[in-house]
Image (cartoon, rainbow, N blue to C red; front, side, top):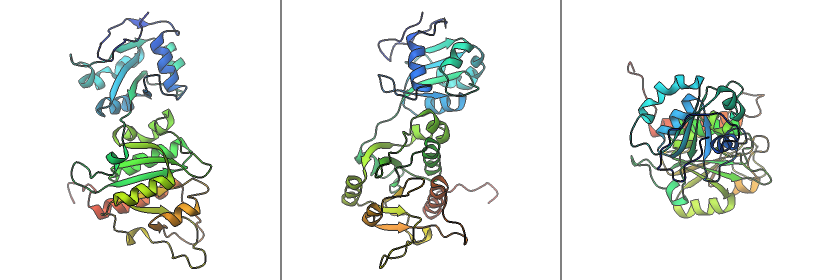
Length: 301
């Protein structure tokens, strides 16, 4: 029976794991089906594409697991696996046992345990390596893991440099490394620096000190003498900016909206009340990418 190595720098080459009580399978089951991090802080990714993203991300890999039929994906992952210097075990198990640990209904037969990159506040407010000013996605009370992953994928596609997850009132934000969120992000959560678990009032105060302008997305009409929210194109997105995206139903708490440097609202056709949180984020981050001139152009453009 194969067992986990004590050190991540010891590569094992076991035979086919045939017991559901194997320690490696227990860790994969906890991370994939249970959606919980392992004792070493690893999360589970499943499927050929997500496993490839994990191997490309630069994050520490604890193990890769193939089922017998999943071995067909080895050729795709070979550039990352077939190297003498890799420091993690490549494991094999039966199709039946793999199905017992997988989170998907029709698993592809390949998965990995990966330790997400850790980010500090100082990390997320730095300019990017290319010198681009910070563009930070702040997910505040976004409860659906699919929305969390989609927002992270969209933000990354349109040039966001980092993300923060924070609670909003009584609503926490779903973990960005849960299996469903990772699938929805298409692996973007493993590439984007993410700072989890911040308190919104503290976060806004720290952004102010760091010179980051905070923008609160809103769907509500202004009250009394409140200024009208700005349209996306009325913002200078080339500045260091943090965009706050609130709960799917309730949005951001009013006190957080008032504490932000500006409020944003997407103009829409008459009769349409609001957009899904992930759809709204896509519109706003697209405008940021347009102003920052980072949208790729087709060869014929």
